[in-house]
Length: 181
Image (cartoon, rainbow, N blue to C red; front, side, top):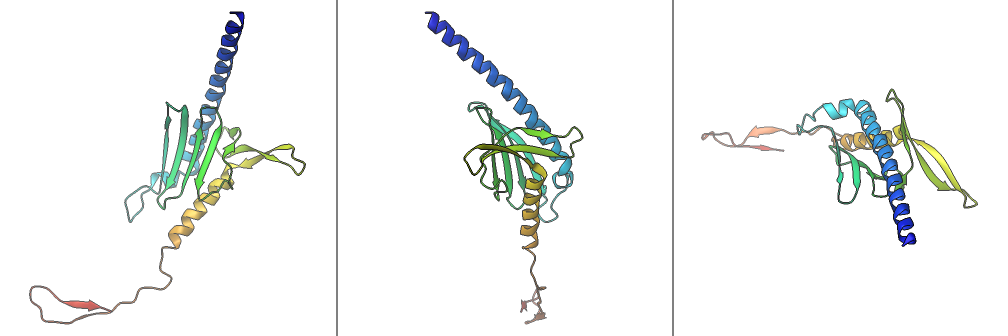
């Protein structure tokens, strides 16, 4: 019976630690959201003149059932970025295009108090197989994503102006008939 009581105490203690870590990570995610609102203010506020849609949308969502909280950023060309906090209090990242270079998880997020910079930790292995923690700038990833969006939209512009000539090809009977060559 004493083993069951100790097991319950250990389990409860572990869950309390996880709740504390999750609360800290949710705060980090909230700070990142504020940082993105500042950095992408023009993208989030202005509408595309062709579609009437926002150039970028940012949504916080998640699945309470799965213990997930997420921040999603999507641009009008379909490029997107998702940073989620999973049930184990890990940050998972996904982007299209893959601006995170294949990373699935990142460490702590840090956002400056003035919201001018954000960074995150990445754990990698060195040449001898030892664990190395390096810090990456979130601005670099965001810059790569935005540059992809701009290049995609610029790629939609025809390289040469469309040249057409129109001429009336028939009699007027309620409307003009014409052809475009």
